[in-house]
Length: 230
Ligand code: AP5
Image 1 (cartoon, rainbow, N blue to C red):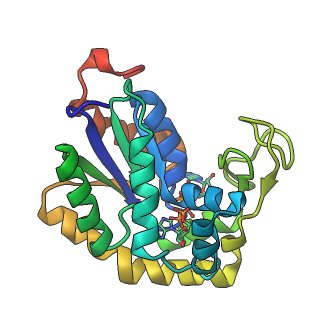
Image 2: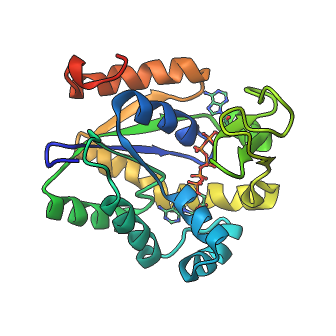
């Protein structure tokens, strides 16, 4: 990625559809997708020291400490292929400290945030999405047994991996994740609104319609020749 690279942020409650939309956005606009939740789960699976430290927080639905998350972010930024047109952060930043941490890193790279896509969703829709979610243990693709089921039971359409229920999708952990979101992450809506970066997306709609709204917001940041399908 060059210094003209674009930076987008997906902000929203657990289950709002960040991961689902992020995959499409990254593919359509050739962006490098940085999903801190997925990076942390990979660290846990690899048995790294960072993963061991992160696990206890994730299992309880709490935020992983700032220093660990910034390690993940910095390592991810070093891996961006040259041909990417920018970065899409999914699930980061999640509080004011991380937002300032991101500003610092971007200042060093001399790039700036283009837009923060806030997936606005009602509580009841969100609970349905989390309760029926299954996730691919290999590629982290998301399905919903009620709303968008896989073609074959328990098998990922994309990579053939095994579909599992994430440990933090147990009802008591979901409740903690929602509380953490309300106290730590929700204030970022105002933070980015004040910086005129916030774009509100109605995330209660079906997947394709949510994506259409996002596309409407992001496309102006690209020349038509830059994108793969716009
Ligand atoms: P993370 O993995 O980021 O989880 P999250 O933010 O809780 O978000 P989710 O993955 O639960 O939901 P989503 O918004 O991606 O929705 P999805 O697309 O899956 O983080 C996990 C943990 O890691 C955190 O709790 C924390 O401990 C730690 N962590 C991560 N980042 C951190 C950070 N920056 N700082 C500190 N700690 C951090 O969709 C949900 C379901 O709905 C799916 O089944 C999907 O198929 C379905 N669906 C999606 N959209 C639609 C639609 N429009 N219509 C119908 N169904 C839909």
